[in-house]
Image (cartoon, rainbow, N blue to C red; front, top):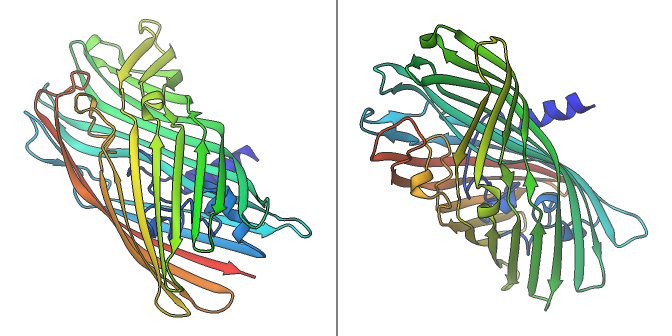
Length: 415
Protein backbone atom coordinates (compact mmCIF):
# COMPACT_ATOMS: atom_id res chain seq x y z
CA UNK A 1 0.00 0.00 0.00
CA UNK A 2 2.80 2.41 0.91
CA UNK A 3 4.63 1.66 -2.35
CA UNK A 4 1.44 2.32 -4.35
CA UNK A 5 0.93 5.65 -2.59
CA UNK A 6 4.50 6.73 -3.21
CA UNK A 7 4.24 5.78 -6.90
CA UNK A 8 1.14 7.95 -7.34
CA UNK A 9 2.77 10.91 -5.59
CA UNK A 10 6.01 10.62 -7.54
CA UNK A 11 4.01 10.46 -10.79
CA UNK A 12 2.60 13.95 -10.23
CA UNK A 13 5.92 15.44 -9.06
CA UNK A 14 8.31 14.22 -11.74
CA UNK A 15 10.51 17.31 -11.53
CA UNK A 16 10.49 20.69 -9.83
CA UNK A 17 8.94 24.13 -10.05
CA UNK A 18 8.36 27.24 -7.95
CA UNK A 19 5.96 30.21 -7.70
CA UNK A 20 5.17 31.72 -4.23
CA UNK A 21 8.45 30.51 -2.78
CA UNK A 22 8.15 26.75 -3.38
CA UNK A 23 4.32 26.83 -3.27
CA UNK A 24 2.10 26.78 -6.33
CA UNK A 25 -0.21 29.79 -6.58
CA UNK A 26 -3.30 27.59 -6.95
CA UNK A 27 -4.66 24.06 -7.21
CA UNK A 28 -6.99 22.91 -9.95
CA UNK A 29 -8.35 25.12 -12.71
CA UNK A 30 -10.55 27.75 -11.10
CA UNK A 31 -8.19 28.30 -8.17
CA UNK A 32 -5.21 28.77 -10.49
CA UNK A 33 -6.97 30.79 -13.20
CA UNK A 34 -8.10 33.24 -10.50
CA UNK A 35 -4.42 33.46 -9.46
CA UNK A 36 -4.99 31.84 -6.07
CA UNK A 37 -7.86 34.10 -4.96
CA UNK A 38 -9.62 30.90 -4.04
CA UNK A 39 -10.55 30.55 -0.37
CA UNK A 40 -13.80 32.61 -0.55
CA UNK A 41 -14.84 30.82 -3.79
CA UNK A 42 -13.61 27.19 -3.30
CA UNK A 43 -16.47 25.34 -4.99
CA UNK A 44 -14.78 22.34 -6.65
CA UNK A 45 -12.72 19.49 -5.18
CA UNK A 46 -9.60 21.70 -4.97
CA UNK A 47 -11.33 23.05 -1.83
CA UNK A 48 -9.66 20.09 -0.09
CA UNK A 49 -6.36 21.95 -0.53
CA UNK A 50 -7.54 25.59 -0.52
CA UNK A 51 -10.49 25.90 1.89
CA UNK A 52 -12.25 22.68 2.95
CA UNK A 53 -15.27 24.70 4.10
CA UNK A 54 -16.01 25.20 0.41
CA UNK A 55 -16.79 21.50 0.00
CA UNK A 56 -20.32 22.31 1.19
CA UNK A 57 -20.97 23.92 -2.20
CA UNK A 58 -20.78 20.43 -3.75
CA UNK A 59 -24.32 19.18 -3.18
CA UNK A 60 -24.13 15.86 -5.06
CA UNK A 61 -21.00 14.19 -6.49
CA UNK A 62 -18.04 15.75 -8.26
CA UNK A 63 -14.82 14.47 -9.79
CA UNK A 64 -12.02 16.73 -11.09
CA UNK A 65 -8.80 15.79 -12.82
CA UNK A 66 -6.30 18.44 -13.83
CA UNK A 67 -2.89 18.73 -15.42
CA UNK A 68 -0.39 21.51 -15.97
CA UNK A 69 2.60 21.90 -18.26
CA UNK A 70 5.36 24.29 -17.25
CA UNK A 71 7.67 25.76 -19.87
CA UNK A 72 10.69 27.53 -18.40
CA UNK A 73 11.49 30.36 -20.78
CA UNK A 74 14.58 31.62 -18.92
CA UNK A 75 16.21 29.85 -15.97
CA UNK A 76 19.78 31.13 -16.22
CA UNK A 77 22.89 31.61 -14.10
CA UNK A 78 26.04 33.61 -14.63
CA UNK A 79 29.08 34.39 -12.52
CA UNK A 80 32.78 35.16 -12.94
CA UNK A 81 33.34 31.83 -14.67
CA UNK A 82 30.03 31.43 -16.52
CA UNK A 83 28.83 34.01 -18.99
CA UNK A 84 25.22 32.80 -19.36
CA UNK A 85 24.43 29.22 -18.35
CA UNK A 86 20.89 27.96 -19.02
CA UNK A 87 19.08 25.16 -17.17
CA UNK A 88 18.24 22.09 -19.25
CA UNK A 89 15.02 21.04 -17.45
CA UNK A 90 12.78 23.28 -19.54
CA UNK A 91 9.52 21.32 -19.24
CA UNK A 92 7.65 20.03 -16.20
CA UNK A 93 4.35 18.17 -16.12
CA UNK A 94 2.27 17.92 -12.98
CA UNK A 95 -1.31 17.25 -12.02
CA UNK A 96 -3.83 16.01 -9.52
CA UNK A 97 -7.38 14.90 -8.96
CA UNK A 98 -10.19 15.05 -6.44
CA UNK A 99 -13.51 13.41 -5.64
CA UNK A 100 -16.19 14.79 -3.31
CA UNK A 101 -19.69 13.60 -2.38
CA UNK A 102 -22.47 15.04 -0.29
CA UNK A 103 -23.33 12.80 2.66
CA UNK A 104 -27.04 11.92 2.67
CA UNK A 105 -29.17 13.25 5.49
CA UNK A 106 -26.41 15.56 6.70
CA UNK A 107 -25.18 19.08 6.00
CA UNK A 108 -21.71 17.77 5.12
CA UNK A 109 -19.64 16.88 2.06
CA UNK A 110 -16.57 14.63 2.19
CA UNK A 111 -13.74 14.36 -0.30
CA UNK A 112 -10.41 12.83 -1.20
CA UNK A 113 -7.76 14.46 -3.38
CA UNK A 114 -4.23 14.11 -4.70
CA UNK A 115 -2.35 17.37 -5.36
CA UNK A 116 1.05 18.47 -6.58
CA UNK A 117 1.88 20.85 -3.73
CA UNK A 118 5.04 22.64 -4.82
CA UNK A 119 8.77 22.41 -5.26
CA UNK A 120 11.80 24.01 -6.82
CA UNK A 121 14.90 23.15 -8.76
CA UNK A 122 17.13 23.41 -11.79
CA UNK A 123 19.58 21.29 -13.75
CA UNK A 124 22.71 23.03 -15.04
CA UNK A 125 24.76 20.40 -16.87
CA UNK A 126 27.77 22.34 -18.16
CA UNK A 127 28.94 24.72 -15.44
CA UNK A 128 32.50 26.04 -15.52
CA UNK A 129 34.14 25.30 -12.17
CA UNK A 130 37.02 27.04 -10.43
CA UNK A 131 39.04 23.86 -11.02
CA UNK A 132 39.11 24.18 -14.79
CA UNK A 133 36.41 21.57 -15.45
CA UNK A 134 32.83 21.57 -16.68
CA UNK A 135 30.42 19.75 -14.38
CA UNK A 136 26.79 19.49 -13.28
CA UNK A 137 25.19 21.61 -10.58
CA UNK A 138 21.57 20.60 -9.95
CA UNK A 139 18.91 20.09 -7.32
CA UNK A 140 15.31 18.95 -7.59
CA UNK A 141 12.81 19.12 -4.72
CA UNK A 142 9.18 18.15 -5.25
CA UNK A 143 6.22 17.91 -2.84
CA UNK A 144 2.82 16.25 -3.23
CA UNK A 145 -0.13 15.71 -0.92
CA UNK A 146 -2.81 13.03 -0.56
CA UNK A 147 -5.59 14.62 1.47
CA UNK A 148 -9.06 13.81 2.79
CA UNK A 149 -11.48 16.43 4.05
CA UNK A 150 -14.92 17.26 5.37
CA UNK A 151 -16.96 20.44 5.03
CA UNK A 152 -20.19 21.08 6.93
CA UNK A 153 -22.81 23.81 6.94
CA UNK A 154 -23.46 25.17 10.42
CA UNK A 155 -26.40 27.20 9.10
CA UNK A 156 -27.35 29.07 5.92
CA UNK A 157 -24.50 31.55 6.45
CA UNK A 158 -21.65 29.60 8.01
CA UNK A 159 -19.62 26.67 6.66
CA UNK A 160 -16.61 25.08 8.33
CA UNK A 161 -14.22 22.40 7.18
CA UNK A 162 -10.97 20.60 7.73
CA UNK A 163 -8.63 18.36 5.78
CA UNK A 164 -5.90 15.94 6.80
CA UNK A 165 -3.07 15.10 4.45
CA UNK A 166 -0.12 12.82 3.85
CA UNK A 167 2.70 14.92 2.41
CA UNK A 168 5.37 13.24 0.31
CA UNK A 169 8.62 14.98 -0.62
CA UNK A 170 11.54 13.83 -2.77
CA UNK A 171 14.92 15.43 -3.40
CA UNK A 172 18.13 14.88 -5.30
CA UNK A 173 21.21 17.04 -5.71
CA UNK A 174 24.47 17.11 -7.62
CA UNK A 175 27.30 19.51 -6.80
CA UNK A 176 30.05 18.97 -9.38
CA UNK A 177 29.93 15.17 -8.89
CA UNK A 178 32.74 14.47 -11.37
CA UNK A 179 35.17 16.94 -9.80
CA UNK A 180 37.72 16.19 -7.07
CA UNK A 181 40.56 18.57 -6.31
CA UNK A 182 42.27 19.46 -3.05
CA UNK A 183 39.68 20.06 -0.32
CA UNK A 184 36.78 19.96 -2.78
CA UNK A 185 34.91 16.69 -3.33
CA UNK A 186 31.93 16.44 -5.67
CA UNK A 187 28.61 15.21 -4.27
CA UNK A 188 25.74 13.22 -5.77
CA UNK A 189 22.63 12.70 -3.58
CA UNK A 190 19.74 10.53 -4.78
CA UNK A 191 16.44 9.09 -3.50
CA UNK A 192 16.02 11.17 -0.32
CA UNK A 193 12.32 11.12 0.59
CA UNK A 194 9.91 12.11 3.35
CA UNK A 195 6.32 11.16 4.26
CA UNK A 196 4.65 13.32 6.91
CA UNK A 197 1.18 14.53 7.95
CA UNK A 198 -0.48 17.94 7.67
CA UNK A 199 -3.83 19.58 8.29
CA UNK A 200 -5.83 22.60 7.12
CA UNK A 201 -8.84 24.34 8.71
CA UNK A 202 -11.21 26.68 6.93
CA UNK A 203 -14.35 28.75 7.27
CA UNK A 204 -16.67 30.55 4.87
CA UNK A 205 -19.23 33.15 5.97
CA UNK A 206 -21.95 34.45 3.67
CA UNK A 207 -22.22 37.96 5.05
CA UNK A 208 -24.80 39.02 2.46
CA UNK A 209 -26.33 37.32 -0.59
CA UNK A 210 -23.50 38.87 -2.64
CA UNK A 211 -20.54 38.90 -0.21
CA UNK A 212 -18.67 35.85 1.10
CA UNK A 213 -15.83 36.09 3.62
CA UNK A 214 -13.34 33.31 4.31
CA UNK A 215 -10.30 32.36 6.38
CA UNK A 216 -7.96 29.35 6.53
CA UNK A 217 -5.14 28.02 8.67
CA UNK A 218 -2.52 25.59 7.33
CA UNK A 219 -0.17 23.74 9.64
CA UNK A 220 3.60 23.64 9.31
CA UNK A 221 4.85 20.30 7.97
CA UNK A 222 8.40 19.26 8.71
CA UNK A 223 9.93 17.28 5.83
CA UNK A 224 13.00 15.40 7.08
CA UNK A 225 14.41 13.53 4.08
CA UNK A 226 15.77 10.07 4.74
CA UNK A 227 16.65 6.89 2.90
CA UNK A 228 18.93 8.68 0.46
CA UNK A 229 22.20 7.60 -1.08
CA UNK A 230 25.27 9.81 -1.39
CA UNK A 231 28.36 9.47 -3.53
CA UNK A 232 31.41 11.56 -2.61
CA UNK A 233 34.16 12.05 -5.15
CA UNK A 234 37.42 11.56 -3.26
CA UNK A 235 39.48 10.61 -6.30
CA UNK A 236 42.06 13.33 -5.62
CA UNK A 237 42.60 11.86 -2.14
CA UNK A 238 43.12 8.40 -3.61
CA UNK A 239 39.83 6.95 -2.31
CA UNK A 240 37.83 7.02 -5.52
CA UNK A 241 34.04 7.39 -5.35
CA UNK A 242 32.86 6.70 -1.79
CA UNK A 243 29.22 5.65 -1.24
CA UNK A 244 27.24 6.47 1.90
CA UNK A 245 24.03 4.56 2.64
CA UNK A 246 22.80 6.36 5.78
CA UNK A 247 21.88 9.82 4.47
CA UNK A 248 19.46 12.40 5.90
CA UNK A 249 18.62 16.01 5.06
CA UNK A 250 16.87 17.95 7.82
CA UNK A 251 15.54 21.49 7.93
CA UNK A 252 13.10 21.58 5.02
CA UNK A 253 9.39 22.17 5.70
CA UNK A 254 6.13 23.38 4.25
CA UNK A 255 5.32 26.61 6.08
CA UNK A 256 2.51 27.58 8.39
CA UNK A 257 -0.02 29.76 6.54
CA UNK A 258 -2.88 32.05 7.54
CA UNK A 259 -5.15 33.43 4.82
CA UNK A 260 -8.21 35.69 4.70
CA UNK A 261 -10.30 36.49 1.66
CA UNK A 262 -13.51 37.89 0.24
CA UNK A 263 -15.63 37.25 -2.86
CA UNK A 264 -18.23 39.68 -4.17
CA UNK A 265 -20.89 38.62 -6.69
CA UNK A 266 -21.49 41.97 -8.37
CA UNK A 267 -24.31 40.63 -10.55
CA UNK A 268 -25.21 37.46 -12.43
CA UNK A 269 -22.13 37.83 -14.63
CA UNK A 270 -19.27 39.24 -12.53
CA UNK A 271 -17.54 37.64 -9.53
CA UNK A 272 -14.59 39.41 -7.87
CA UNK A 273 -12.36 37.64 -5.35
CA UNK A 274 -9.23 38.37 -3.31
CA UNK A 275 -6.99 36.60 -0.82
CA UNK A 276 -4.29 37.85 1.51
CA UNK A 277 -1.98 35.05 2.62
CA UNK A 278 0.79 35.12 5.24
CA UNK A 279 3.40 32.41 4.63
CA UNK A 280 5.74 31.70 7.54
CA UNK A 281 8.90 30.88 5.55
CA UNK A 282 11.18 32.23 8.31
CA UNK A 283 10.22 29.28 10.48
CA UNK A 284 10.10 26.68 7.70
CA UNK A 285 13.29 27.52 5.78
CA UNK A 286 16.08 28.35 8.27
CA UNK A 287 18.89 26.00 7.31
CA UNK A 288 19.41 22.46 6.08
CA UNK A 289 21.69 19.89 7.67
CA UNK A 290 23.08 17.08 5.52
CA UNK A 291 24.30 14.03 7.40
CA UNK A 292 25.91 11.03 5.71
CA UNK A 293 27.17 7.99 7.61
CA UNK A 294 28.32 4.43 6.93
CA UNK A 295 30.76 4.99 4.02
CA UNK A 296 31.82 1.91 2.09
CA UNK A 297 35.47 2.91 2.52
CA UNK A 298 36.79 2.78 6.12
CA UNK A 299 39.24 5.59 5.36
CA UNK A 300 36.42 8.01 4.60
CA UNK A 301 34.80 10.01 7.41
CA UNK A 302 31.16 10.77 8.15
CA UNK A 303 29.71 13.99 6.70
CA UNK A 304 27.76 16.75 8.42
CA UNK A 305 27.21 19.94 6.47
CA UNK A 306 24.91 22.91 7.16
CA UNK A 307 23.53 25.25 4.49
CA UNK A 308 21.92 28.57 5.42
CA UNK A 309 18.54 29.63 3.98
CA UNK A 310 17.08 32.20 6.42
CA UNK A 311 14.07 32.91 4.20
CA UNK A 312 11.80 35.86 4.98
CA UNK A 313 8.09 35.58 5.71
CA UNK A 314 6.00 36.32 2.65
CA UNK A 315 2.74 38.22 2.18
CA UNK A 316 0.89 37.13 -0.95
CA UNK A 317 -1.97 39.15 -2.44
CA UNK A 318 -4.13 37.34 -4.98
CA UNK A 319 -6.98 38.91 -6.93
CA UNK A 320 -9.21 37.19 -9.45
CA UNK A 321 -12.34 37.65 -11.55
CA UNK A 322 -14.83 35.26 -13.10
CA UNK A 323 -17.15 36.48 -15.86
CA UNK A 324 -20.14 34.42 -17.01
CA UNK A 325 -19.89 35.13 -20.72
CA UNK A 326 -22.84 32.83 -21.43
CA UNK A 327 -24.82 30.04 -19.81
CA UNK A 328 -22.04 27.62 -20.74
CA UNK A 329 -18.86 29.73 -20.78
CA UNK A 330 -17.02 31.40 -17.90
CA UNK A 331 -13.94 33.55 -18.40
CA UNK A 332 -11.23 33.94 -15.73
CA UNK A 333 -8.33 36.28 -15.04
CA UNK A 334 -6.13 36.96 -12.03
CA UNK A 335 -3.01 38.55 -10.59
CA UNK A 336 -0.84 37.20 -7.79
CA UNK A 337 1.97 39.09 -6.05
CA UNK A 338 4.36 37.92 -3.36
CA UNK A 339 7.77 39.44 -2.67
CA UNK A 340 10.68 37.06 -3.19
CA UNK A 341 11.28 35.47 0.25
CA UNK A 342 14.87 34.38 -0.44
CA UNK A 343 17.57 36.81 0.81
CA UNK A 344 20.06 37.69 -1.94
CA UNK A 345 23.05 36.40 0.05
CA UNK A 346 21.38 32.98 0.36
CA UNK A 347 20.22 32.71 -3.25
CA UNK A 348 20.89 29.45 -5.04
CA UNK A 349 20.63 28.82 -8.76
CA UNK A 350 18.75 25.55 -8.14
CA UNK A 351 16.23 27.04 -5.68
CA UNK A 352 14.64 29.44 -8.11
CA UNK A 353 11.52 30.40 -6.13
CA UNK A 354 12.18 34.07 -6.79
CA UNK A 355 9.06 34.93 -8.81
CA UNK A 356 6.99 37.87 -7.59
CA UNK A 357 4.39 38.68 -10.27
CA UNK A 358 1.97 36.15 -11.79
CA UNK A 359 -0.80 36.74 -14.35
CA UNK A 360 -3.48 34.19 -15.28
CA UNK A 361 -6.12 33.96 -18.02
CA UNK A 362 -8.51 31.16 -18.98
CA UNK A 363 -12.01 29.84 -19.50
CA UNK A 364 -14.39 27.10 -18.47
CA UNK A 365 -16.92 25.55 -20.84
CA UNK A 366 -19.87 23.40 -19.69
CA UNK A 367 -20.01 20.81 -22.44
CA UNK A 368 -23.10 19.14 -20.97
CA UNK A 369 -24.99 19.09 -17.65
CA UNK A 370 -22.43 16.52 -16.48
CA UNK A 371 -19.14 17.68 -18.00
CA UNK A 372 -17.14 20.92 -17.80
CA UNK A 373 -13.68 21.57 -19.25
CA UNK A 374 -11.25 24.32 -18.25
CA UNK A 375 -8.10 25.67 -19.89
CA UNK A 376 -5.84 28.65 -19.35
CA UNK A 377 -2.34 30.04 -19.09
CA UNK A 378 -0.22 31.45 -16.28
CA UNK A 379 2.67 33.80 -16.89
CA UNK A 380 5.34 34.07 -14.19
CA UNK A 381 7.02 37.38 -14.94
CA UNK A 382 10.79 37.25 -15.32
CA UNK A 383 12.79 38.01 -12.18
CA UNK A 384 16.54 38.73 -11.81
CA UNK A 385 18.58 38.47 -8.59
CA UNK A 386 22.23 39.56 -8.22
CA UNK A 387 23.94 37.81 -5.33
CA UNK A 388 27.09 36.55 -3.67
CA UNK A 389 26.52 33.37 -1.68
CA UNK A 390 29.72 32.38 0.19
CA UNK A 391 28.38 28.85 0.78
CA UNK A 392 28.26 28.02 -2.94
CA UNK A 393 31.32 27.09 -5.05
CA UNK A 394 31.02 30.26 -7.13
CA UNK A 395 32.71 33.61 -7.05
CA UNK A 396 31.25 37.03 -6.36
CA UNK A 397 28.59 38.88 -8.34
CA UNK A 398 26.56 35.91 -9.51
CA UNK A 399 23.18 36.38 -11.16
CA UNK A 400 20.04 34.22 -11.30
CA UNK A 401 17.17 34.78 -13.76
CA UNK A 402 13.85 32.96 -13.97
CA UNK A 403 10.79 33.28 -16.20
CA UNK A 404 8.08 30.73 -17.01
CA UNK A 405 4.76 30.05 -18.72
CA UNK A 406 2.19 27.42 -17.66
CA UNK A 407 -0.64 25.70 -19.51
CA UNK A 408 -3.41 24.55 -17.15
CA UNK A 409 -6.27 22.17 -18.00
CA UNK A 410 -9.02 20.43 -16.02
CA UNK A 411 -11.98 18.16 -16.72
CA UNK A 412 -14.88 18.03 -14.22
CA UNK A 413 -17.86 15.75 -13.89
CA UNK A 414 -20.86 16.48 -11.66
CA UNK A 415 -23.77 14.13 -11.16
